[in-house]
Amino acid sequence: MKTSNTFWIVLAILPFFALVGKAQTAKLNLKESSILVKGTSSLHDWRCKTEQIAGDISYKAEALTLKDITALDLQLVVKSMRSIKENGNYYESGMDKNMYKALNAEKFPKITFTLIDISNVKASAGKADFVAKGNLTIAGNQKPISFPVNATLTANGIVFKGTTTFKMTSFGVTPPRALLGTIKTGDEITIEFNASFKNN
Image (cartoon, rainbow, N blue to C red; front, top):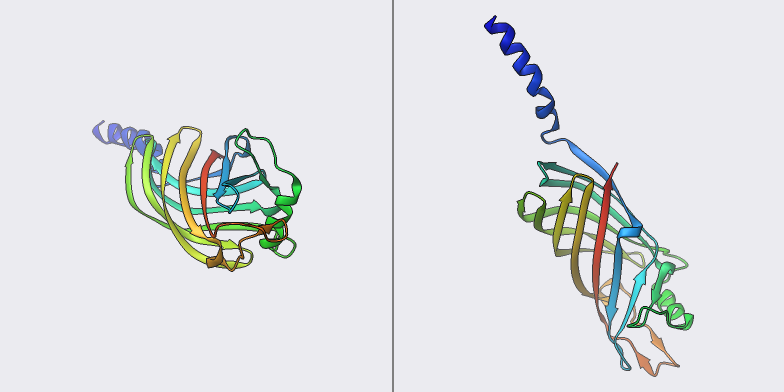
């Protein structure tokens, strides 16, 4: 009888062991995600939003506590980046054309990010903070980049928020100009992201 009871106990807890360390895959939910690029110019500060973003992630979590991210890839369509005013309205397309030219969008239509690893992880149920390290590719030039990330985990997926700042010239991109070169764009840009992934 004791052996029989042990068998049923083991059988009952097996599903829980199967879940431990199991990788969960998820896809980016575009409607709930945003990537905003901010910069300066000799005339005024500027910003643009990206309207076409795709991504996939594979991560491990236990009881909504993040354990690891084993893979993460993001792709941004360059020609979906649109300059916007403070009120959310679009600027004229001429500004965007200068940006596409600077990013060589015809030859390199996408900006990509591939995660290498995460470090300094501080995780609790439903929340996590860590430093993400990955390869960012802009205009065909790939560079490693690291930045802090805040994550929120739910039963349906995971959401990442954060910012990172770098210089366009570090990726071989010449800051765009406008009005026959009279308006000059600053070299440094800041990216603010809110990436929401839904479990498959």
